[in-house]
Amino acid sequence: IYYNVCPEYFSSLLHLPRTVSSRDPHGVVSVQGRCTSNSSPVATIISQQQQNSKNLQKLEKLVRRQFPALQPPTAICKADGSWQLVGSSTECVCDQGFVVSKINGMCTG
Image (cartoon, rainbow, N blue to C red):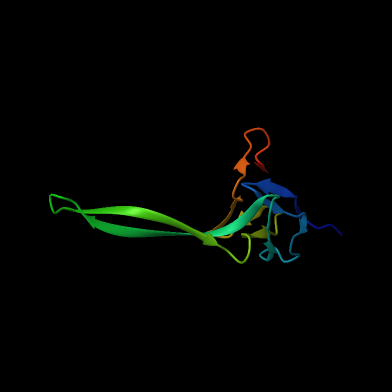
């Protein structure tokens, strides 16, 4: 007897633990990710905003707003042992006073 396993995964300040996949070949296992040290989950909402310019043409621009989220991003462990991030507007970002290190990709102060 053997099981496929989704390996431990670190990316974009998100940590997913090693997870045993579903025995069902079409099944998936939903896994709550965890934001890495010094980062927190935020929800991003992108909206379209219209503005009137001086020459009365309407201009449209995308406005990106971020709000604290209750939970970090969710991913699914597929039966073949691969990860798939669930289409979500939630992501992990560095906490105030921290920036992503170019060396290790983690939030440092």
